[in-house]
Structure formats: structure tokens, C-alpha cells
Amino acid sequence: MLRLRLRLQPGTHVYAVSRRSVHKLASLQKATMLPPKKAQSLLYPFSELEAYLDRSVDRTQFKLFHPSVEDMVKAEKLFSSSPSHKIDYYVSAERMEHAPALKQPEVCFIGRSNVGKSSLIKALFSLTPEVEVRVSKTPGHTKKMNFFRVGRAFTIVDMPGYGHRAPKDFVDMVEPYLFTRKNLVRTFLLVDGSVGLQKADLIALEMCEEIRSPYVMVVTKTDKCGHGTLLTNLLNLQDVVKTQTASCFPQPFLVR
Image (tube, rainbow, N blue to C red; front, side, top):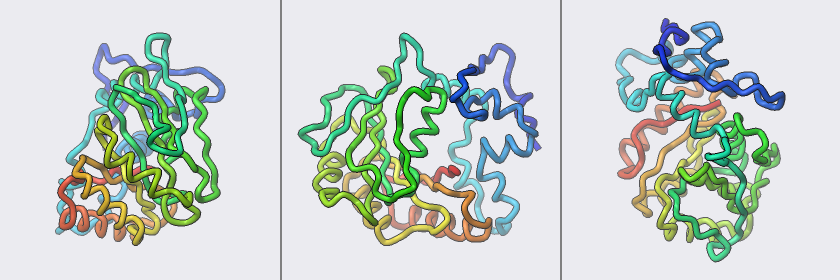
């Protein structure tokens, strides 16, 4: 078992935040102080599933992107607000004509209603709790495209969910953005790991393929089902990515 606390090299700075409203595991420093096995499963979610995989399954497809703790520390700094690197909610838009004209790169999050888009973005901003990301257990809570600026580095766009209780004008709102937004550099397509790919997800996947812009599959709610169910859904998703996509990053990312 890797002892993650020992992997931080001398001179590596880990930024801790002491604000009361920050989650106790928001900073990497806190996460690496957990017992090694717990830290390993938190930072590298796939490691918890490996023991349940048949030996014939190729594991490399799940480890193409395998950042070190030092890499995570560098990434964490992007999501830590400072006077010279302000992170904030910028604006919401119902139509492309209402979308702000921003020059910095954009990444967007799409997925079925209640798949966890807003929760994931809220987690990304956990070191900046003053940034309000509204999260609801009610499907279809997000009705607009919500833009969040991460300093001058990039903008995150939280898109309305598709499927159950999606906004009536979802197609008119989302498709024009995906097909015409010139500074969109990556789309994150979220899929509920506890239920696997649904028909609506496959339609969204086809749309991402039509755009021919790079996108990534993110598997959410990996703690809401047993290992067997999760692995079945994960391997099915991986097979779809391998056989039916050309623009999707071959490794799905797992989040709780």
C-alpha cells in the first residue's frame, strides 16, 4: 500500500484553509493525513475496485491519467482563490445570445438531471466556499447555463440536466452552446455509476461525437451501489467508449 504522506517531496507546498465552512477533507493536506488505505481510495478511486476485477481485464485503460500527489497539489492551487486569482460565479444564461463573451478557455459539465453536476462543481470549489453553487436533490434544479470564472485560467459552465424534468427549452439552450462555442475546450459528460448508461446518456454521447470536440466521461455516485454493480456498469461504459467513440478520452473518471 502506498503511503501517500511520504510521496510529498521536500519543497512541495500544500495549501491548507482554515475557514469553518470548508469541508474537513477539502484540502489535499487533510486527505493525505488519513490512514494510507483510506487516502489511497479517496485519491485513486479505481484502486478500491481493482481487487474485484478478473485478472483477464486490462487495467491500463483505467490508469492512463494517474497524477502524482505533487500533480494534485499543483491542480489544487488553481481552485484556491487569492487577490490575484479570483474565483467567482459570473453570470447565468438561458440562451446563447445571453452567454457572456469570454476569451479564456471554457469547460462544461453535462449529464442527466440529478447526476451530480452541481455537486461536483461545488466540490471543485470546496476551498472557496464563498462561491455559491446551488445543489438540490430535486431533479432538474439547474434551469440555466451557469458560468463560474476560475481566475484568468478558464471558465466552468454548469449546464441544465437532460432527461427527467429537464427545462422545456433544453435543446435550444444547450445544443447551440456545444456546437458554436469557440472557446469550449473540453466537455465532461457525467453518468450515474449506480445505474450505468441510460438511453438519454447515449443520445448525449452521440451529440458529443457529432461536435468532434474532446470530451471526458465522469462516473458519479460510485459509493451508491455495490462493487459488483459498479464494475458491471463501468466495464459496459468502457466498452461503449472503446467501440462507439472517437473524441472521448479513453479513461472514465470516478467520483463519489
